[in-house]
Image 1 (cartoon, one colour):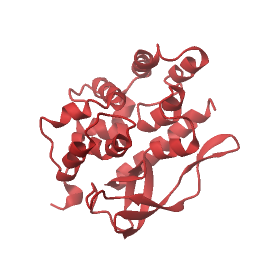
Image 2: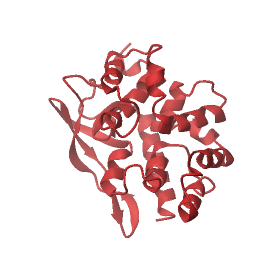
Image 3: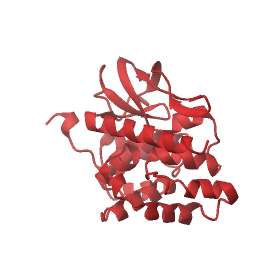
Image 4: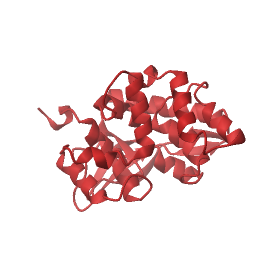
Amino acid sequence: MTLSTVPLEGTLRFIRYAFMPNRLRYCGGDDNRTLFEYGTEGVSDGGLQPLLRQFSGALSYLQLIARANNLADAFDARVVEAYWIGNELLEGVEVRQLYDALLERFGKQLTGRTRDLVLGKAPAGAHPHHSFHVLDVHSRVGELGNTLRTLDDCRVSLGRVLSVDAAELVVERQPVSMRMGKLVLDEARTERVLRQVDGRGFAEEATPGDWVSIHWGWLCEVLDDRQRRNLERYTRYHLAIANQTI
C-alpha cells in the first residue's frame, strides 16, 4: 500500500490543519510541540483527543456536522474532512441546525446588525465549512481582525506544487483579493509555503504537479482530485455567500 492510499484518521487530519494556527497562538491549547509529534509520528492515542478538544471553535462545527449526520464521533475522519476540505456531510446539516448552533455560540457575543448578519448566513445557504467561518464569522466576532491578508492566510487554500526547496515548497496559488467591492480568487501566483519544521512535516510525499492544501502558509496534505474539487467548490461557494453582505 502506497502512502497516498493509507487512510488518514480524523484526529491526525485535524492536526495537519490546526498545527500552524496553534503554533501562531491563534487557537487551541499551549502544547504545540506535542501536537506536532503526534502529527509527524502518525500516532493517535488516548492522549490526543484532550489536546484537540481545546480547539473549541473548530470543535463546535465538528460536533454539529457529526450530530446532523448521526455520527457519534466529532473526530470521525469524514467529519474532519467535511470541515476543513468539504464533502457531502455538509449537505446533511439543515438550515435550522446551523442557525441554532450559531445562535448558541455567538448569540450573546454579537448584537444588532452584526448578530443578524452572522445568523442570517444559515438561511442564506451557508454550510459549517471552515471557509464560512473565516469569511463570514471570525472577522465579525473580533478574533483575528479583518484584513484581506488575514482572511487569505486563515482560509484553507489550494496550491499546485512547482518545486521542492529544502523546508519549503514553491507553489502556484490563488489568493483572495477585493475586486469592485467583492471578494474573489485572484489570478494564480507563485509563492513559497513551509513544509517542514526542524526537518519534519506532515506531507513529505508532496512532489511537483501535486495539489496541496495550505493553512497559514503551512503545507497540510496532498489532495486527491475529489478533495481538490470539494475544497475549491466550497471556497467559491462561501465567497459568494460572504459577498452578499459586504
